[in-house]
Image 1 (spheres, one colour):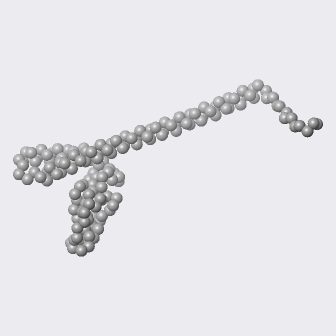
Image 2: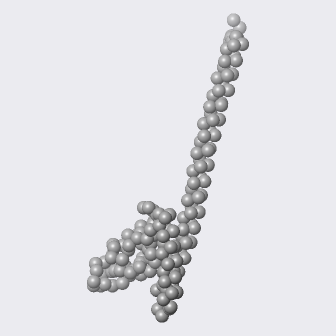
Image 3: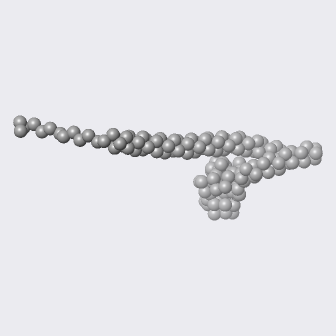
Length: 160
């Protein structure tokens, strides 16, 4: 030979060529189907996340209304009984609506301070309770299931 190598070209029968194309097309179809399924799941997850974030934002705004009712009820003093009863009824209904969505207030006063549940806005020297105990609550904390929607704003005891 002349030192050059030549590759032998093997011709496949036409049927084998068509089978190879069909396998290739089928593989592309399966990949496209899998890609679409992944896209669909990702889109559903994104939509569910957006709905959950919007719902959480709406509930947090609604909690501000509940706080306003709480403050109004604390200031009622000499208000007519009918007005107080009306405000209390609306307050109960509002709390009931939140509870149907799984949103509940949690107890803070008398509990140990927990940064996951409480936001300390002040401390007070106390001989009546050990340090690190919540002694007063400025704003109620709420959770939905185990997730804290809004931490309670509290005052915590410290050592004298």
